Length: 251
Length: 258
Image 1 (cartoon, rainbow over the protein chains, first blue to last red):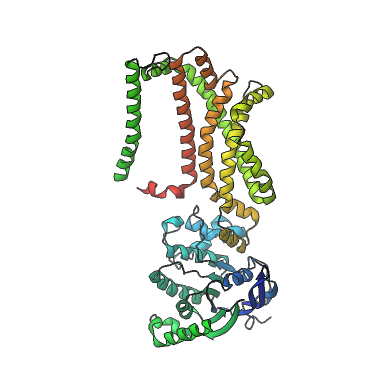
Image 2: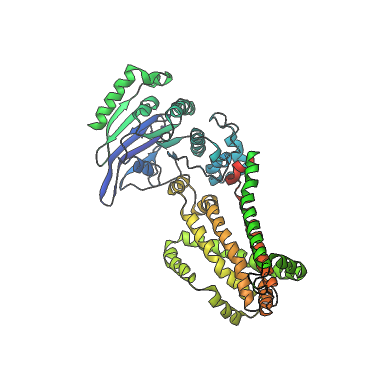
């Protein structure tokens, strides 16, 4: 199979309803290798439901999830998953927290530590190895949470509003840092957000979800060059994209 | 440094209040407001404590042993039952009301039955302690297990964790905090439970000693043993505290750093 043309992650006409109430309908999503795709929509549109299906935690009523062409519908443990809440274990040190996916796979403590410690500096966590989550700031905890997700799988990551609990300034710093990490590792990423600015700044492509039940109504291609410009979010071009998205969400 | 000073003054308040109470008590006895045979003065209680000290130590050790063994057994079974009840919701629905129901049975009422069934040895005492301590441990551990964030469990599942891995790596560790809350309550029950069970028969223990001195109207000795029971309870509670601090270092971080 030619992996160049195969999507890293592909969802084909996913439908899901709860108690006869359709939540999402006919969702088709495709993420190429190394691409960062955002899923933008208002709260309660069914983004998280879609994520649970993509990560294999839930079965869709109909539809297929494929990873590199292989059908994995309903199988968890294939893609890494990160939430708005950092979900670090308060009783474990940061090192043990980020090593959790490795421990679960049966990696020995020594090897897991060795593997994890290679990334502490890059993730801005040097010196935090033996601290507990409560000793870290919100931004640092999200970094640790992301490192944990990364150590589980550096191939495909699903991020469910990972930065929405952070303050605006921390968020901007995190965005810059995050897009560097993602592009350096060519990790394929699907990013849920309701923050339009965040989607524009970070994404290669944006899916807009709206309606009841939730459907993907638009798909926008972003210019990846813009991401290198730290002041992009104050340009006229940025505002035009934003206006366009706002119209599409509300239509 | 100021923190340390503060903790000393914090202890100073209850200590001086206690001293005041004792002083008041001594004065009441000195002024003969209450007949001496009904209320011995603190001084005579201390005197009784000193004269009977070797004997009291022997009895305390017995009571302490019973309390610790009973507590230990209730911890083992309590945690086990809590884990099973958490895992199987049918069992939770079936057993939970029954466990609550057992708490409405007065300990003092079943104690003589236990003596009838099991004799005057250590067995009925351990059983009684077990019955009283079991409850706070099961209930607290169970609520700790059930309080784990479902999103956290979902995350662990998304990383391919088995139910056993989730139990060992997340649930049991998360439940520690509320387990210890239960254990602290159970620890005080254990000592009191031991004394009550000794009232009804036995050769050794603070409860046995208490019954003897009460029958001979030696109220100074009676008060001495009451003090001692409080001290044994405090020791057991302190032990629980020490174990708690050792096993949950992340909870006591800030205190440790200052």
